[in-house]
Length: 211
Image (cartoon, rainbow, N blue to C red; front, top):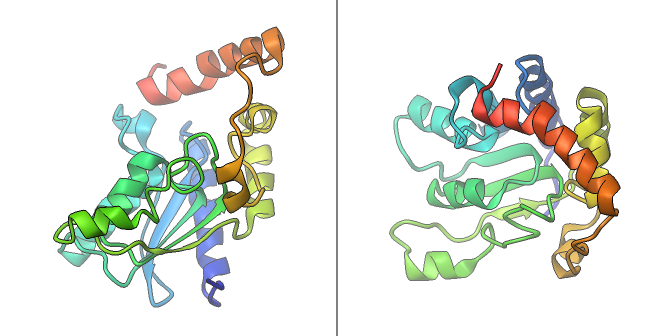
């Protein structure tokens, strides 16, 4: 599905929210829910501040939109995000009945499209049509180069580590879904050491709310 004229503006809004999240010592993720090109809600990652691992940007944006609209269903809405929604967020997207998803960087290790295809699994809506809408239209890799540049600027260590292991990538999502996972000994001790530093300095602090 081709982007519409509002997509670039709303994706750049995700970039703004991701940058603001970093300013709050959160991870650089931002998400917007919109309808007919108009923003309904926009949120950044909120895990650290809330001390709640469910406060991913996409879930925060979905909850805000539901509260503002006064209903659980987001039929007719588009969700934008600078990183491919994870499997957890993708289930929320499906249950909220979002009609369209636009994301920039693919997430082949954790993604709900390229790793586990929750977003376009028609079995959900066939088995539980009362809960899950048909699969949303998905625009993958939209403005991925800009999203990659933002990640490199705001979170250089996270960017370098994600590049080393392929956590977030500009590559084609459909091709990534067919690719074999990286070997367990990838980069050996150098990789393990880098991940340990990243965990102690970033992931543990953000997700667990440590000072």
